[in-house]
Amino acid sequence: MKSIRWLMVLPFLGMLGGIPFVNRVEPYVLGMPFLLFWLVAWVIVTSVIMAIVYRFDPAVKEDEQA
Amino acid sequence: MNAALIIIFAFLLFSLYLGLQARRGKDMNLEQWTVGGRGFGTIFVFLLMAGEIYTTFTFLGGSGWAYGKGGPTFYIIAYGCLAYVLSYWMLPKVWKYAKEHRLMSQSDFFARKYDSPMLGVLVALVGVVALIPYLVLQLKGLGIIVSEASYGTISPTAAIWIGVLAVTIYVMISGIHGSAWTAVVKDIMILVVAVFLGIYLPFHYYGGIQPMFEAVEQAKPGFLALPDKGMSASWFISTVLLTALGFYMWPHTFGSIYSAKSANVFRKNAIILPIYQLVLLFVFFVGFTAILQVPG
Image 1 (cartoon, rainbow over the protein chains, first blue to last red):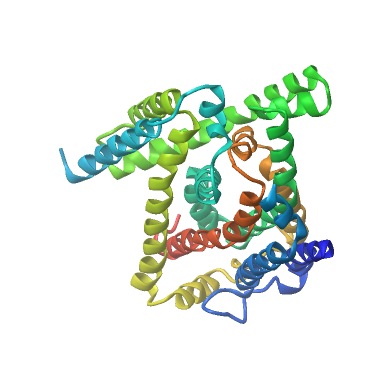
Image 2: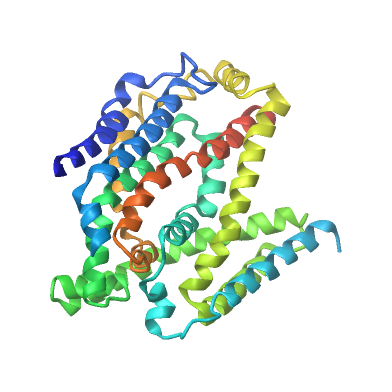
């Protein structure tokens, strides 16, 4: 399941590729301007993605045994 | 002697004490001193990295940018987050190589890996040259903070001298253990203070975070997004990418990679560090609150 690492491409696409489309102040979400909300949401998604990758990456188990 | 001075000196002594006691129970040799005997677990590496990454710049600069530049400030959240994604596969590789060859510094890595002592020298030189303005910036920040916090009783110059002396003493004696231990206090204090101010100030002046942003937007339309020219969307993308790629190139950050006890330490940190970044939000809120309250 080394291919699970490909998930790590998503934060780059979301945070960088999404910018031209979300560069606006309104609507406010959770009190934040939309651009800020978008980035904060991706920070949280990134953390979840990293946790998923950690769970399934075979390299983690190899290093645990070593 | 006012209360502010007592607090400042109490914290100075406390961090000096922590920095010095960090040495206890360790047979100090070069490997212990520089890279903590390669024995730091997830939490210690987290504290060390958080201590190194979230500095005076982050807190003065983060709110300063929010105040002066608005939307472009958000790039700070983005580049850190992406750098931690990169760290997941980059740091374990660097760490393994360093452990295998018992490396101590960033220039060791390049000299050994590319089998070129000259490259090692070059990397060391570039590192030092880059660190000088960085240190000046951090120390200037320290001077401003201490002199403001002491209502001017301690001059910025005196504050810098005292700070530098304290750091030099505990680093000489305890090495990286000292830095990691003082980072514990710093990280906790910063977290508490930033979250408190970031919530208290917008609520005090505007009755909430969204009303604060709405007031700023009304006074300066578009200030909370990226402008069309200058710090535009394309500036954002290229700067975030560049900064994320160079994130671990600082000699001190690169060196602290060596202190971990296993490769999985970094993989776990890649989960925690993005979330920890969100403390920056509160720093931004402080800066945005100041726009209309302290104009000019």
